[in-house]
Image 1: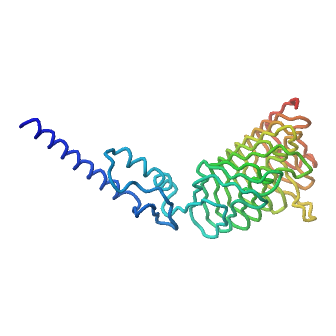
Image 2: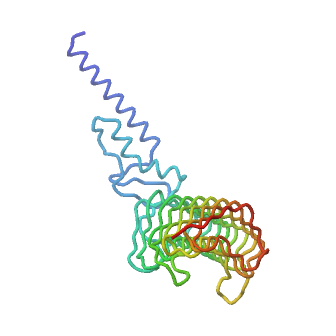
Image 3: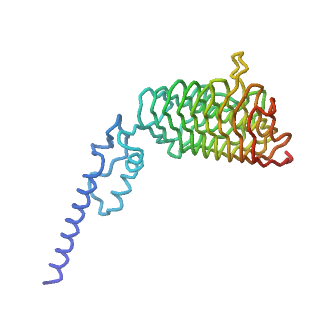
Length: 309
């Protein structure tokens, strides 16, 4: 076989191999149409499709399909979020870019049961000056929010009259704007049950986690890092809901949290009863624990130390 024949044969073999790889990827990937990549859920994501011709590199095909792989990890039918929105249908949603709002309001409202929202490492950015809500969850159940940043809002996450809600692996940042109360709040839980707040980092807020109302109970707050700035007042606060009733939350488990750089680490109101606070680490400016009705809750194996502002 001559040298020219060997080169021709090798080139032809490479073309066949490239075609086989492209066919295999196409069979396992969402259908490509023009410049958009379609998913089995609703809507298209523009400008994410692979090029229509093979540019001589298998790597370029795999790279161009990376966004579809990320979405597929959230399950079939995942729906993209690219703007401030109200979610009114059950399903899985993923944030595809940072979202900033310049006026008071709520960046994302979840108004349907059985919703999973993956912030996908992106950020919701508020207008600052203690205004607005990052994510609002009200009157629904079966909701999960995770994996992203919420910054510059009056309240990072607001959970009201809801149950079976999880907020996990969130970075929530305030501007250390101080009072008057409530000032900036990391997470507000209002008359809600079976809420899980886990592995979140909340920083530079006036109140870290604020649980309110006799309708709140059976919540689990664990493994969070709550760090005030120069003006943090309460790391974890249990209070009435402000409607006139003195009833506070009952039956929560609050454990293994780091609460640092607040005037008061943990505070419970007059009729906050039957909650368990254990194995929390508290570095406080003025007081580690303020239980307004002594003995009405269980405080066990918490570690506290006074620090200077």
